[in-house]
Length: 126
View 1 (spheres, rainbow, N blue to C red):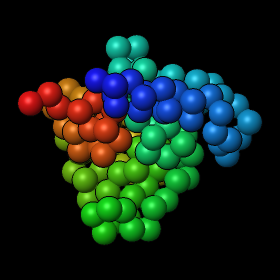
View 2: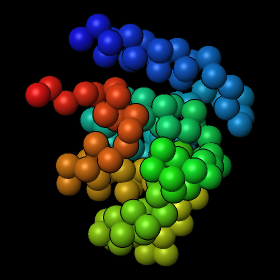
View 3: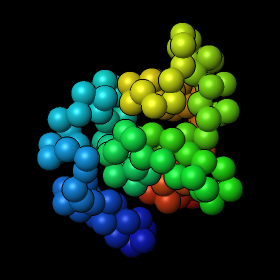
View 4: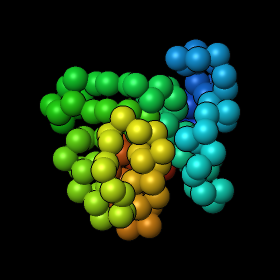
């Protein structure tokens, strides 16, 4: 429990203090506002942890050895498959709005543990 509280505190500090690609706070980005109210706080924490709020974030070699893209650091094949399942026409991995729609799909289908940051923030209680 203590680790979880510390991690949430640190991520909260990151949201407030880390500079992003613009001088606006993370809440002002239109793509964050498109998230459902129920998932908003979780989404903000995951975005801050994964990309620091930068929609152009790119990791050429993540822990699994594959590149990751955008605010939620998607693996391209995963994004494309989930985007199709979510009903997104013309998927674009660089679109923050589409990434959030795919995130909502993942939330509805129990796939949020696919994000390392989600599992760090909300460890499974076994």
